[in-house]
Length: 79
Image 1 (spheres, rainbow, N blue to C red):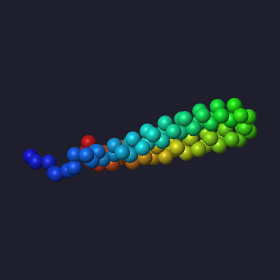
Image 2 (image 1 turned 45 degrees about the horizontal axis):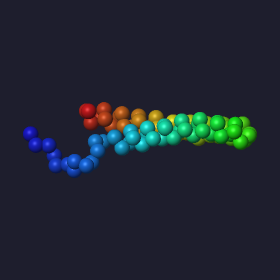
Image 3 (image 1 turned 180 degrees about the vertical axis):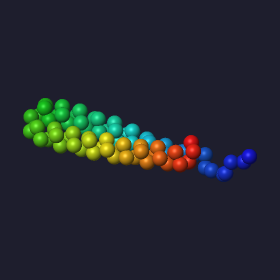
Image 4 (image 1 turned 90 degrees about the vertical axis):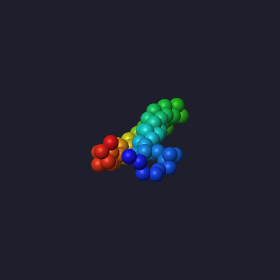
């Protein structure tokens, strides 16, 4: 049968959200490792390294929430 008319440039549902989550996770890892290295190199107090790690942890939490929403939406769609 004919599929509904859809713009071929539109990505499938959830692909953009999954890509956003992966970029956020990559940034979180870079921030965590880079922040620890930078604070050791320039002699910042240990609390700054902990702050970098907490921000990275927030990024991971955001990514997990987004990926869970994508997973649930794909389950409802039947993909």
